[in-house]
Length: 400
Image (cartoon, rainbow, N blue to C red; front, side, top):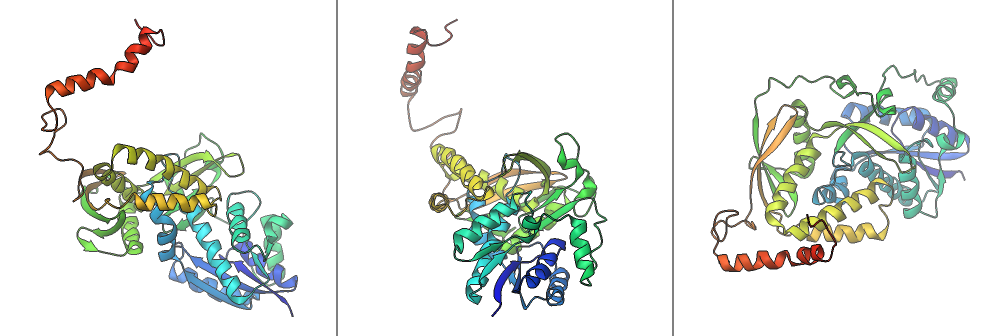
């Protein structure tokens, strides 16, 4: 009997090559396309039709959007995770989610191997490899594109010989669209100086300058967004609506420069309206409902969680520990956030919560309070600076 391999399949050049190559190596190929928000219905239909033509034995299309939010994105919201204070981890979360879904199919089919079409040049190969090996160490891992190190032209020639015409890309930019954001790469992202043009993004150049400010209210329940302007909505639909509205205003576009898993610096353009709006709103609600020390450690551990996810360490037990902390921190993060969308920006106008730690009846910053007397405040201020006084007297600082 032929061995069975389950292939993560996007329907592009690389994974199409993989189907035929694996079949010629004696495998029965099942292709799996995991929809994490980046495929239109027409695109999914094209992929489902292409797979059997390439010779795959079977094809699966999985809608993983709900699972993507529940198992990955909600923790990024809890942690207010923006890599470099700028970039939402859209691709990172998608790849781990996709890899886990592929492994689930492979185990169901009792396959002998799993495969992906990543090259040896980027972060995705590591994310897929680590996930496949962690979740299914008993399965063979096959990576035809990385192993053979073929050029795109060689892949196109191979496919043409088998009756499939994949013309050379006429577009200048590679684009990865997903529920949590879109990433864009091109010649301008290969150095640290060049400006990525607006035309590189899906939808091209935006003229949002004439749009009037738009008021919006978001409601969170224990850190989870669940309503827009009083209308209850599931997380997947809420994110889609914020992406649509935010895109029209040009919110969440930028270029991120940072460290890759491979140890080199990398640069990528991104557009993530929903991620930026939700994280910015959630952060302000937390400022109202959490203590200062909670906020400090959430920033620290949220960034660590984002680092684990981004750099392929999602299956380290530490990630589960951090998820438990992040989830527990959201017990009182319930309330509403009032914001205004402007062209290219948004602002949080106000927040309210039944768990607010800001009580004007008890004390108002810089005004008055009922919790302490002036004499008590004077004593506190004196004691608060004692160590600095002693350090200066001992010559441990600038006394002049």
